Amino acid sequence: IGGHPTPQAGPTKPSGVDRILAIASGKGGVGKSTVSSNLAVALARQGRRVGLLDADIYGPSQPRMMGVSQRPASPDGKTITPLHAHGVTMMSIGLMLDPDKAVVWRGPMLMGALQQMLGQVAWGELDVLLVDLPPGTGDVQLTLCQRTQLTGAIVVSTPQDVALLDARKAIDMFNTLKTPVLGLIENMSVFCCPKCGHETPIFGHGGVKAEAEKMGVPLLAELPIDLETRLAGDGGTPIAAGETAAAQSYAALARRLID
Ligand code: ADP
Image (cartoon, rainbow, N blue to C red):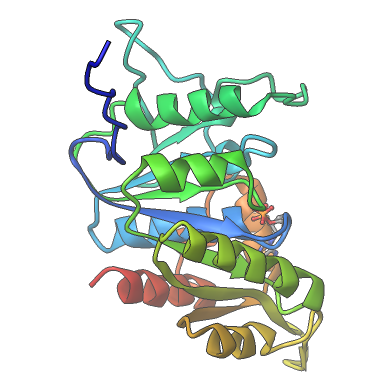
């Protein structure tokens, strides 16, 4: 009786990790995981110590995109040893789950899994940890923003109206939670025909730029629809590991984010 109330634990960060960037999107399928893996690889190529945490509970795609499949070890039963691929230290919720089973978890379980991946994975010394979030504005995003010292969030969208509408909601959520929005990325911008060079704006073009201006956040990159990017992601070696124009775009994005 009359004791002090338990102080609410403030946001934390794994020791040894310098900054944490969340990669978000309003809806699925816009390329959030593709951007996350490529940005991670581009940063690693520039000599940064990079971690990639795949927190997309409902559709973890980083094991495939980064080309890893083994279950991470836990020699002491407490800490989890992360995996390494393309110069990136990584962990995915997908490596702990049966890939063919749907995840039907309630909020507290999701939060537990996220906290475990942040707190129990031996991330080591990192300049930056990228967190590939599930799409939308749910429990995982909320927990991450409230319990973790996030440096900021990046929102990926296609230029299509339906995607932009949801991207706006994601930005609004980060603003409400006082997480700095570092910028927007327009993915699947235009398609440049490899045969004739003609450019087709399949999902429109410039919509994200206009939205970024309206919301007062920087437009960080406009990335085209590119067959090689898709094939590289499916093949487990992100396009950023190569020397193509797409790889250069990711290198520029990496420099812009961390200089
Ligand atoms: P999200 O994480 O938003 O659900 P993904 O990164 O999984 O989206 O991308 C969805 C699909 O679109 C994947 O098959 C991926 O390879 C493909 N994709 C993403 N970005 C591009 C791009 N710029 N060009 C071509 N294909 C892309």
